Image (cartoon, rainbow, N blue to C red; front, top):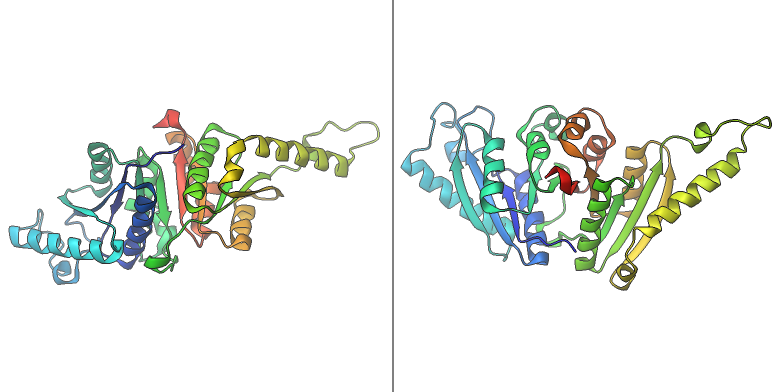
Amino acid sequence: MIKVTHVLCPVDFSPFSARALAHAAALARWYNARLTALHVWTDLVGFDVIPSLREHAAGLGAPSEDMRQTLEQELRRFSERNAGVFPVTTVLSDAPNVEKEVVSQIAASHADLLVIGSHGRSGFERMLLGSVAEKLVRRAPCPVMVVPAHDDTPPGEVRFKRIVCPVDFSASSCHALEFALSLVEEADGHLSLATVLEIPPELQEVPTRDGIDVPRVRAEAAAKALARLRALIPPEAHAYCSIETDVLDGKAYREILRLAGDRGVDLIVMGVSGHGALDRWVFGSNTASVIRGSRCPVLIVRDRSDV
């Protein structure tokens, strides 16, 4: 079973990172893990700082001692306000490259999970085209939960009782299933486990003299996929959660989003493989499209061999 001992949440004092911190606190509470809120000060134009320092943010380099004290106080207030009663450690760092500093903090603190919010100016479209969040998704050595800008779950109501986990039977998606099962166990919740037949099965058949029996081929492919799905579920899992298995037809990201919407889920858990795959993922794969369109957080899990 998955163990989480330290959750790291970078914050920029925006409402989007406030929601991310609320989700991070919920996860840390469930796993009895440490929670750290990290703010990386940078003098680059365009990054959020607290209002009292915003007009002075660009071009100052490292913060002065007075500015650092102000930032530390505001970071503590921000963290306590959004993490609820769960204890949170705050870390203030200054660095010219935010994503590199966050990755360094992950390694130094042995964080098991990174929780980030999409940036508020233009949401995930900008995130996927070069923002700090996109780079963290690609570079973080641990699983990353991305809380979308349009997630409006009240902090006190964050939960992960209804989870969708799409599986393509790769090592990374099977590892993602471990996370999904762990979370749904903690919540005593419901898991929707699904696979998508993107390529119509009949197109993979060699035609005979009589052609292709499309209904038969589709039924056989769906039955095989369903059997493979159910074989992934540990027998003991049914004792602590309810699990529903689905074989879907169509474009994967559309079917995943439709299923998540129909089931009213709190979280989507997906696996990705390798840094090369993540580079391709950023520019148009199913995972990127799911994150762009999701109304709930998405947990991205990399195969163990890639971390």
